[in-house]
Length: 379
Image (cartoon, rainbow, N blue to C red; front, side):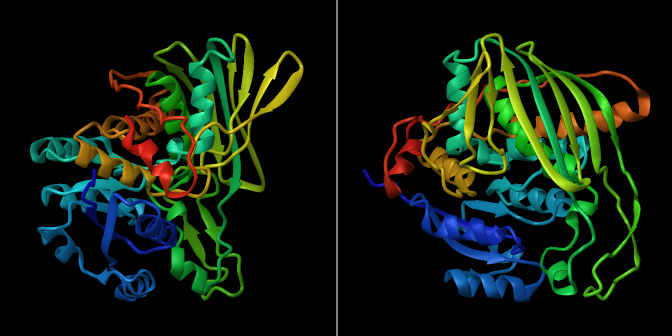
C-alpha cells in the first residue's frame, strides 16, 4: 500500500536546521520536504540550495494549499508567535522546545489547535530513539522492579565564548528568555521521564539566574569585553513527585566549566542508568546488587534522527491515529519548569491536574536501512 507523503516546510534556518532538513529530506519516506524560510533571507537561501528545496517566506508557507505540516525551528522567544500563525493557518505543527514562554500563551495555542482540528506537538523527539525506547522497555518489563526514584544532574557551561561569525550563526538564545538550560535541556529529561513514568503530580524547588551581568569572553568577537545581561534562569534545583508515586531530584545548571551528567531511575530490584536524552544512541546499563551490566540496544533509530517526531506526525495524519508526541506532553514540560520558577518566589508546592496517556512505544522489531521506518507505521 502506498501512503502519500506529507508535504512539509521548515520555518527557521539556524544551527539545528541542518540536522532536521537532512533527515526530513532523506530519512523519512512519509515526509516530502518542499521549502524553508527564515527572517534572514540569506540563511533560508543557503539551506534551500543545499537541500534542493524552495526558498520561501513565512507567508508563502502558511498560505500554501499543499503544505500540511510546518516545523518551527525559530528561537524560543519567537515560538509562540510563529506557532500561533501556523495553527491559525490550519497547518499541523511541530515546534522546537518549548512551545512558548507562558502558560497563558500555551492555553491560547491549545484553544487554536482544537478549533482548527490540527496536530500540534513539541520537541524533543529524542525519546523515540533507540536508547530511550530501550530504557522504557526495561522499565515496562519490570527489569528493575518498581521505579522508586529518579536522579537528574546536568552540569554544562553556557558562556560568551563565540566569535562574531559563530555568534551570528547561532546567537546566544540559551542566554535569553525561554532559552536557558531549564528550558533548553530540561525538556529532554522531562520528555523521557514522561515517556517512561507519565505525568508529574507535584513539584517544588528553586530556579535562579547566577551572574546575570557577564562579559563577552572571546577577543575574536566584536563585542569582546562588553557586558551582556542574561534574561533567563540558568540554574534549577527541583523535587518532583510523579503520579505513579516515583520521586525525582532534578538539577540543571549552565554555570560550570566542567561537563557532568547523571541520569538514573532507581527501582526496587535494580538501577537503570540512562543515556544522554539529547542523543539517540546513548549506552544503557542495569545494576543488580553491585554488578553493573551494559544492556543491548533493543530498538531502531540509533543514529541521529531529529525530525522523527515530525515523521511520526505525518504517519499519524495518513493512518488517522494519535501522534506519539502529544500536545499535553509539551504543555506539561513547560508547566513543570515554570512552576519551579514560581516556587522560587512563593515557596509553595505546585500541584498539577494535567494528564496524558504515555505515548505508544516504538516497536522493538529491528530492521536495517529505510525499513526501520515501518516501526513508525506500526502503532
